[in-house]
Image 1: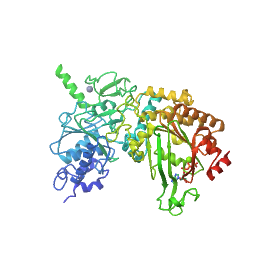
Image 2 (image 1 turned 120 degrees about the vertical axis):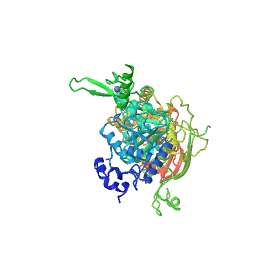
Image 3 (image 1 turned 30 degrees about the vertical axis):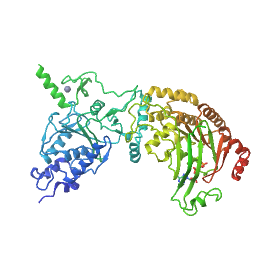
Image 4 (image 1 turned 60 degrees about the horizontal axis):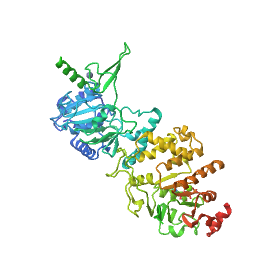
Length: 310
Length: 301
Ligand SMILES: Nc1ncnc2c1ncn2[C@@H]1O[C@H](COP(=O)(O)OP(=O)(O)OP(=O)(O)O)[C@@H](O)[C@H]1O
Ligand SMILES: [Mg+2]
Ligand SMILES: [Zn+2]
């Protein structure tokens, strides 16, 4: 007889994924008293309930009882718990880390979810039913049949201006956001522009100011009036929040100091794309700046399309 | 005469559990504000008065008599134990300033109209915040209470405009410059933090901040206490001309009868949380009725 996976969680705390996989051979990871998707049904139900609440109050941070996973906190455990509570046998999962499908972190998460669910994995944005991501939104427009789960390190947007959790909660309750606005004003006084790069604060549904997670400014407009459900999970801080489809999401800005996306001096050096978010790489040998797509799948798709044209 | 800008009725503020004897065992006759039966502090009791546009009301009394508590209750800084307050404010068309990024609560956004006689103490905290921001300006004795010392001085003024939905930085800075010019804050230093300013200058920044939204009610709590005499005189001078020029309803709290004489037309004298005398300032200073006021006037003048 083996102990159900969820009862081992305490012992599993902080054990690296590989060790866990070694200790739990494939046959024991799903079925026979083991939960599908690692978490037990009660836990998953609780997370789904909290998710529903988050959907009902767009941009509002709902506390949840974050569980231990065989993946260290700070490595997307909030997002993974959302993914595990939502995923069904017929889902197709894509996992990206800063736009990249093949980073160690993305591969680890995929490996783990695959082992505890058996669901299919994909790199194709359009094919995935569920996408878990860290710090990027896919370039390809997502549909109402898809859900995007974003990993969140710091869910509280007002942490910029207020250290106390008690106070920030009251501020959200009263929609008392003038200190956030003042922060932007002071930025302009000092630097003549709003210097926030990633984690650009947004007003959701004319009610809550929300941290969109450390996505670049480029991605922020994609949150507005989208067809897709966006879910945000912070494992360490135990918060879930959501942007339901067709929700008004606007970056904070002034009439004379508007929100701006990043601009790039040239296109992707691999695929030539100009209308997407690019990573800057400084070539060591020459010191030359080179730009490539941050969304690796988008780049590949673009290159294939280029080939077709030739 | 038009309806008062503010009317306060039976305001009570007790710190502590309170008991049935609090009222009879405290007050000017008992010469205490701590109830011997339950140890609660009766900071304010049965305070009623109203205030009209253009009127400057003084509140004078010894330390601990409840002056600041009264002001803090009016400003929604502290919740009264009981009482009603109704306000009459000019409805402003603030659509022009409203950038649509002002967050609302329960579908309400910004300042809502009030029915005549609404007890504003019972409004939601969001509504109170909006009302306070539109309707009131306050200047505290301690600038640390009224200012963010390490933000820019212009930001301290802009903050209240931001609360009101202003969304144009250039226009906010223009408004700040106008206010600073009027309150005599050096405009070339408008982006320096108040912490780098002298005490008198900090009070001027506070005054500019308090006036930023063209309030109907200005609350001043010992604003010149602690300043050098010469600085004091200049700040008082400024306040005197401002209250005349802007035709505001103003409450001046001070234990300095000189300040009361200079600024106010009507005065309430408080002791142990109660009003012991009220009337025209000149009359009170020349012919005080209550023994406590007589003592106060004779020792001070
Ligand atoms: N938070 C509090 N908890 C308990 N007692 C308080 C509190 N705040 C004020 N008090 C008490 O309420 C009474 C009135 O205080 P208040 O500050 O209103 O007096 P004041 O007239 O403004 O005095 P001062 O001239 O010294 O400023 C005092 O006895 C004070 O100790
Ligand atoms: Mg006081
Ligand atoms: Zn590319």
